[in-house]
Length: 350
Image 1 (cartoon, rainbow, N blue to C red):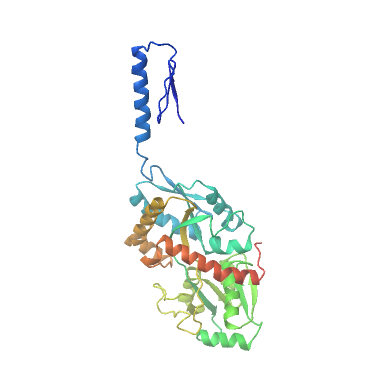
Image 2 (cartoon, rainbow, N blue to C red):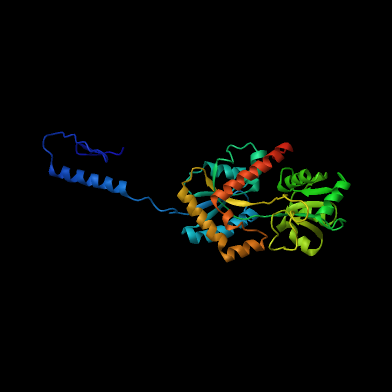
């Protein structure tokens, strides 16, 4: 409890005790004491500053210029209008995004440090890394932001003309096909394992140092298939250098409406996508989360933001899927879906 001593007297804000050194109280001492009590009272009654009263930091777990960084910058530029404060991007790479996530998990739950996570950082890392935090409880969801559905694509010379035919071809040629991936435990690798589990097919995985060299080999016919993001594969599909069999989502891509979904073309439920969202540390006050969610929702409703994201091949979740509760439920379901698949394949971070 705060106390103030004035010329032999002690004042406390809740109960004021007087300890006179003499029987005579001087007039100036009474004046000083009254002023001290008034000051303490004004401090107690002063309202807290409205959130946010200073810039907010959004930690992006990858280098500047990458896909996650670009999407975050487009959205946070617009969030500034709603929050009345800038949202500053801080790029922290390393260990598949787990270093950045750990920093946010340890940050003060005051709404000034946010995390831009995705399927890899918020789901896969929990099954492949020994983390110092629990992905299921270390963060509070704010909103899902964008979805990046993948495409099932094959080399141009592949005889099958649709997904059913392609699955039949793979079954007729077990272990003969090669799927290009960006390494063990990456999205393309895990999606390939999921595809094998659902279709009963067998093929081999070929790791590359990135999407670009893998796509070059697919175009050249050196490998048979890839399951990769639409942003990476659509240019080659449109150029006619590879075949696209299906979008791995519940609905068709707005930028490629002629490509059917897996549900339409013979593999219902094979839904894979690199979804993104914003989080804040656990125990962040509810009113702050509501304020942040409103800013994200406003940004995702902005026509300019929607156009820029669509041009990058990104789907914006429906309004009802942009709530904190919806992201929390989706995150939980994705963990329950993917952790058993990853652990059964004994995949560990490289």
